[in-house]
Length: 462
Image 1: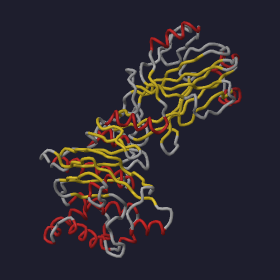
Image 2: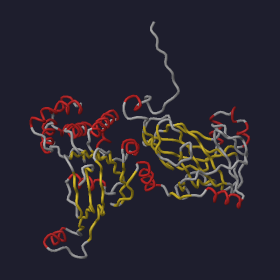
Image 3: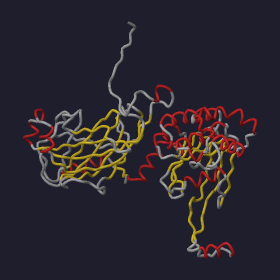
Image 4: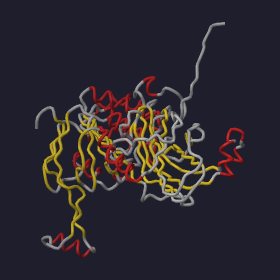
């Protein structure tokens, strides 16, 4: 294997034989495998090379074969076919508590794990202060690990694996257990390990971590290599597997369609010029088909598609803090309605509403009524002054009575809420991730909390 590659897999696969009963299993062990014997392919033939010193990500939905692949690389599992070559010492954090004896103390488990990885007693005595400092679990280092919380478990386990200076470090979702401060410390350590030539393999469902740290990403699906390459494209394909039915639209074709059908498009954004004849051009990117998504409301309006882009109309789902998110949505009007109100809500992955706005709050110019068969397009621009993380986007469509709309500035919220008619809401229409400007120092935390607001400071000596 060339020295610039730390890991090389050639035609590696993993299959498991399926037995209908213990008796069938016994027959399978004693006799040659029947031709009718069923098998399950956890990992289909895969060839892969990972460069030394790279940060390699592996993503995929649950059951895609990620853990199987990691266990083959780390030597825990033997592949059914193919060859695996790994250069150097491999440290793996595959499962919470794996390799720890619950009756041993943290210090004893650290020593045992270090010895398994080839660290002598004298070498261990040199690195144990660093392990204690990094784990930061205090006097619990000398308590049985069965008394540990999940956070303490992963702190000690990561500290042991990271402090022995491995050539290859494999991390499988373990960091998700730690708090944000510990995760930041872990990623700073991973960065230093990479600078020393360590190859880091990361399996995670956090797409912002993948986008920010990984040089190359492998997307697995049903045990197959669906994509290998840049992080942005891998993440887009990963999201598409979950809930997006993406289709490629031609902007010219749409314009021809609009002209032939006489459909009328409206601009509902902060920059609206008030012209109800302006044609809002749909971005020439993949659209998210909403026509088959569950929608709540009275059914008078249907959301048919959605697009999430940056301010240059490039389709994206991963953004850096303070970039601009652009939300396109399109609705079909099924019955005559009054003044249209289009809106959106951004929530955290835990359901906490971070920000929301509608076309009325944006002072967008809208018609006084819409007739059956109309198609409405809307666009919102949102500065992403939010903390790093994954967010969920909801979109909706309501209407206000014309008399209320004329006097909207003088109306109370109670009047607005009681008169509004909710026609269409798509909950969890799509999601996107925000990554920090930088992963170390001040850039990792430009403000405290979930959202940033304009603020200033003055300091003086008195």
